[in-house]
Each structure stands twice: as C-alpha cells, then as structure tokens.
Image (cartoon, rainbow, N blue to C red; front, top):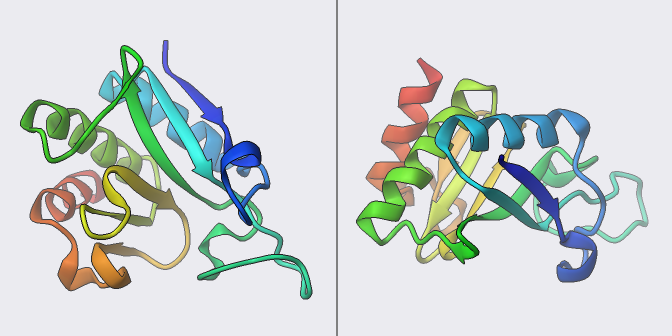
Length: 147
C-alpha cells in the first residue's frame, strides 16, 4: 500500500509546514496508481502570512506544493535509471491526471531523485525553473496525464 510520509519538519529549513489535505490525497492516489510504495516529502508547506519564514515562489504557500522523492523497497527511485524512470513517469502522469498543475524535475534542478509536485499556475520545468529545461520524459508524462 502506498503512503505519503511527511518528513519536512525534520528535513526542511523553511518549508516545514504540513501539506494541504488536497495535495496529500493527490500524492497518495498517484502513488497507488503508479505502484509506488512511498512518497517522502522533504520540503512541504510554508506560511503565506507576511513576516513568516518563506522562500522561493508562492507554490508552497499553505501546503499546496511538495518537494518529494519516491521509494520502492526502501530505495529512492532515480529517473536517470530507465527502470526507475518508468515508475516516476507513471507517477507524474497520475499526478497530472489527478489535478497537479505544477511539476518540476531534472538532474540539474533538484537532482535525479527529487521532484516538485503541486498546484498553482500550470507549468512544467527543469533547471532554473524554466520550462525549456524540463526533460522530455517529464513533459511527455505531464502531457499524457493532462489529456
């Protein structure tokens, strides 16, 4: 059975807040559809209120985005490994089909084992937060789920 393991309180320096129930449910459902055992959240929500600790874009506000890795048999999946990429791709497709609108991943973005999934303006990106830098497999997986 798939599960979402929120570890941002221990791992994140700023985005320590919980995920929104909507995003948590989306990640769990996508993991089930893709056959992923565990979704580990290493960076979750951040406060929207002025003066509260925050970083980067507003996507993580109120727990509406997560930076994650996926595991099978206790090992992080690496989307640079073809067998792992098939699983990660299936997960990304399921996320897009279930309503995720912001998905980012690339070896030169957060490394080959980590992804950003959440809501906000529809976008797919890689290094530098740029759509042009999104790997083809990521663009294809999102497009497949968005149709």
